[in-house]
Length: 577
Image (tube, rainbow, N blue to C red):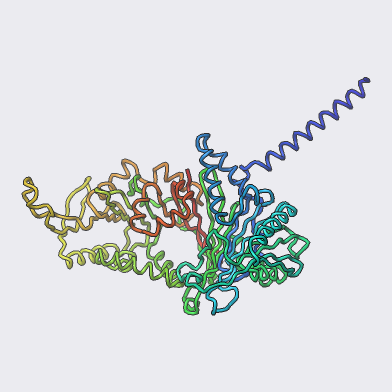
């Protein structure tokens, strides 16, 4: 072989190797599940064109579920991987329960990068005689039209053999397949006033319809979809919305405006049109919709929210660091709220919940119970004077009880408010006394009580006990209130022995959140689970419906990040293990 020929051969071989290496590198970097840390392969649901602009709910997963499982496997330890795989398999089986479908056999060969569920209408046929017929639509993108077509044909062939109620029709170039049985009016057909976003069961309804939307069958030319609905009319409406852009959600200004504020990479997206009555529309503040984008990081899930109101207001975050009041919250606290200007927060919160009658009643009832137990008017006696920093926390107490700590920055009205609390204490015949604890003057509101075991224990000589109803202290620029002397002792020594703000778990839980914010809502789930299950009986039912999430939930942290042109923004971090 001549030297020149040899060099040509060598250069060609090197170029081939470089091309193969580049191709391999590209494949690895595009296929690795770690890419999901920056967001899914798509950013917005294409299926929004099938959904009405007035739809109560749209929720989309913007990544193939198999890639999501692969990402979980990357971060799981070798001992956890089999359990993680089993959990994903259980979720797939639960979603397809009683449908006769198998994910690996029927869905996996063709499923793409988008799964969108929508409640299209509270009553799609607008017929009051048959009750509320809620419209449900499920749009699953297809990466293999032939395989998805084969799936539908196989499914309906089996259904035709099993029942005579299967029908086929062409609608605007799209083949609709459905079965329909007579419906019976039931009270459960309607969506309850409190839970207006009620979800259907995993069982297929008596009326069930499917359609395959390909780029050649409609003007939707970006993606192919398999549509599932609980009635063929829901499918017809979905096809109509693709052609009439002014009818679908994708082209509404509010939807697009909210999405522009959700800037992080995401694997899921939800959009809720908040229902409003005529009375609610006349309130000072009207909340119109809520958008939520969910992304992943190495420690859990990060969600951005955009709450759209009808006002054009812009505010900037009030804080650039955690509030100093957190130094009086012990590191063992499993629940804490810290921010500034409690008075402004309560005004904003009251205005917001006034647009939802059910939520407003729930808050009013809870507030009434607290005010009756403590004998004070919280908005007037506490909230009004807290204009600076504050922190509220719960800590484990004795005998499976809980104590509360409230630290608030003093203001011009704080002494007047404390004097008012003393008056209320005297009116309830409490004693007011002072003592020293950790070199600090402490004031306690106490009540004399009879010990329940007096006379039953020979060693007990006194029937009278002193019970602290409240304890307060002025420390530096803060007023500290606790529900017991023990809790006050924990608050005073927190700065020395370790406060919540110095706790590594707390620091990890706020790390993914924006540094400029309005404060934190922090919940250590394992540490407070028993407390909230006791206080909120409905929580156990919620846990069962989302067991994989609650079983892995380590902490939940929420912060708000101001308002832009009437859109309130917040970030939520769910730390998982």
